[in-house]
Length: 156
Image (tube, rainbow, N blue to C red; front, side, top):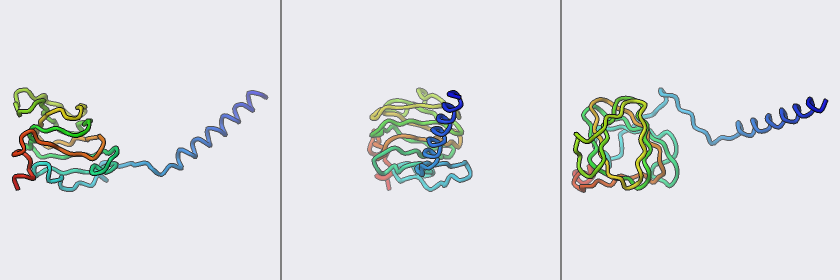
């Protein structure tokens, strides 16, 4: 009888926890065909698209976005103000470290790859095929090009 009572109490307690968890309205679920792509911000070279999945990259706090780039796309050496956590969703990113875009020093990271870079670490990327990466970090997000002349906003 004690075991039956204890089981009932645990079950009722778990039901309460489950209903509390399901009562949370601060969740986000996006399936692939619901991703809404828009032109990337002008801080990136033309041709890329972004889809914000969670949060707001322009504000303080956690966000997740996807970046889709065409074949032949490249981002010159740059840094970010916060850690950059990236998962390759499709395609391949060629990632290199340093203040010069030495393609021979880049590493090819195919779909399923992951990398995390600390804030301020200079890096560059180029793409030989259409590629989608997911970036998760804290905002506000930004890019500082090592060579200011590489900033697409300054060359407009």
